[in-house]
Length: 144
Image: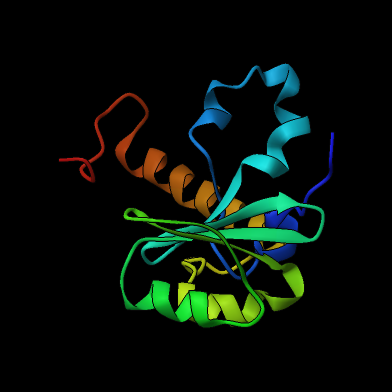
């Protein structure tokens, strides 16, 4: 099987990464092997996904952005139709393509394992205080 770029490793700290629909239908036994192939970066009006090796593909629906994307020297038009355009480009040219595609950025900050553990401990303390205040087995006023 040909290799491809792992979008989560390469861009996961800056941008949202989701999976193609077929990822969830895949046999879990083979899912880990095919996981990088099924990763997608959602963008405004389209998406970026692996094409193989150091190449990526971008699909964008018709409109002014699609025309801008096609005009870039770093892209090769793979398919163009009434539903949109798909271009191929090298990962080194990601930033140029991303300016037009506008990938969805990660909403939450990335925490270190130490920060996550501190947050877990704080939540455990809060939960313990709620149990002591409202008693075990009694309904909490928070949900009321």
